[in-house]
Image (tube, rainbow, N blue to C red; front, top):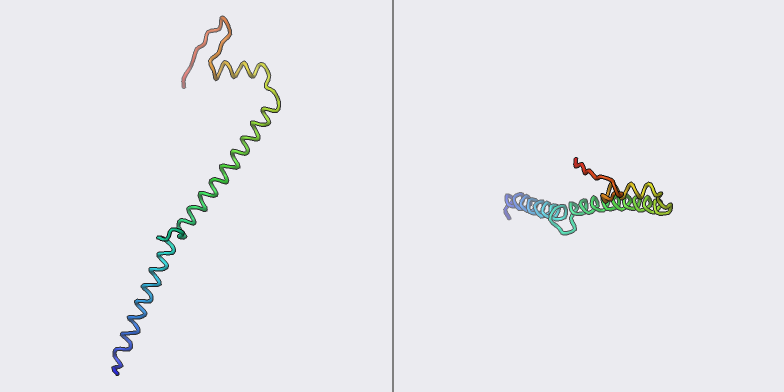
Length: 98
């Protein structure tokens, strides 16, 4: 048996084993459909959706509070004039765009 072939063989096996381990690690981190990179993207999207949901729930609560107390006639008139361009008889409407 040749003693010189044993170190070459073990270094070759070590290289192949290292290559396979690196490939598997790269596969799990980057290329797999459930990879770590995609998991991080999903977590970020999930957090954005939670934040957006909380903001919308806050807006809903404000709208519900607004609807519980009926708006005054002055407020209704202001909204009708500013948002819908309504006017009383004899009023002149001048629209200013900015």
